[in-house]
Amino acid sequence: MIKVIDVKKNFGQRILFECKSLTFEKKGLYIIKGPNGCGKTTFLRMLFGKDKEYSGKIHNLFKKNIMLPQQPYFFKGSVEYNLAIALSNESLKSAQEVLNMFGVPLKTNINQLSAGQRQLVSFLRAFYIPSDVLFLDEPDSFLDKEVKEFVYRLIEDEAQKRCIIVVTHYQGVALKGNVIYFENGQIIKEGELYK
Ligand SMILES: Nc1ncnc2c1ncn2[C@@H]1O[C@H](COP(=O)(O)OP(=O)(O)OP(=O)(O)O)[C@@H](O)[C@H]1O
Image (cartoon, rainbow, N blue to C red):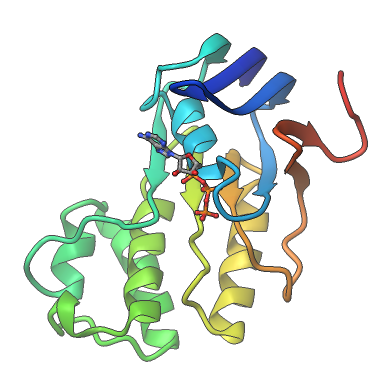
């Protein structure tokens, strides 16, 4: 569980956003939306524990936290190597099956993939690492409709077992979950202005 209590985030004199009260439960899908520059990535990093410069409290009680950043790190080498370095044999097989399904070559150097293919690899690598909470920062920006729909269903199913928090811009294909949005510098959960 993560509890956010009376949090304010500033950069110098500028107030970026505030969040009066928000709870992320043990399981479930949370979708963070808002215009460019409103602070979604900043908020995600604060929940993850990477950014600690704010007033108020964020209690993150999850033991194992995994984050997929907007620009994930890749090791020099093949697609397979980039997965094998992070995943158990069983998880590696699951990731490989998805990549085979979408025609992503496993033996190819990671740098030779398209942006969308690389994004799918980085998503699968983060997704198949066991965790209590998974933070995904725009995992879908380069994916085509078919891959996006597949990834969204994977996320939705998995969110029945653990907590997944996603930042996304995309409006076309529905990702079903609790929507959290930024409005006039306030972070609000859909349906309840302030708890
Ligand atoms: N270290 C920093 N110092 C000063 N300002 C920063 C810093 N990091 C982020 N900002 C500013 O905070 C704002 C929010 O940035 P953030 O990346 O969180 O937005 P976002 O909602 O994720 O945007 P996008 O949708 O474009 O990815 C931006 O205006 C950015 O310039």
